[in-house]
Length: 161
View 1: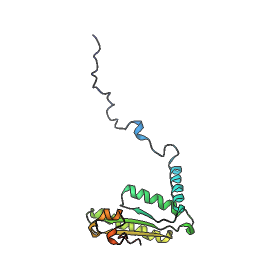
View 2: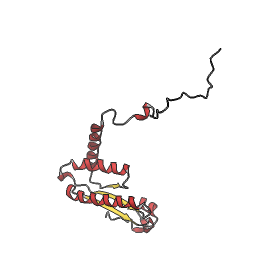
View 3: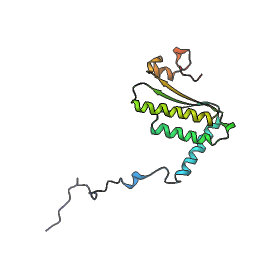
View 4: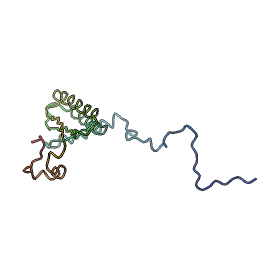
């Protein structure tokens, strides 16, 4: 009896219980050099940028994994500089538009309070800012922010001045 032909649409089946992703999906940026050397290289790059000019940095913080990771890397990098070199002002800003989940809002508020306390001990120049309220408080919100807020005399309506 001749062997049954497979239909062109049939897919090879995985053994039952094998939910692991294909090997290519497991690639990590840390695979080549390892976790610690990759983090050290990122911190070196951050320190180099920090020392390159006196322009203040503004770091947006939402309390989520991405902004927390960015802020943690910056904090680690800058804290390794001698205190006399920590001159650049770093603004950490967070906005509570009053529509966030109360648990998330409390988490962010507590995180910012702890950051401010630690920054007072460790950093020379920093500002931890939490803005609350609807963004309609500022004229044309995002459009005004992007153009330097011409209706506010060319100044951004933020406490950075």
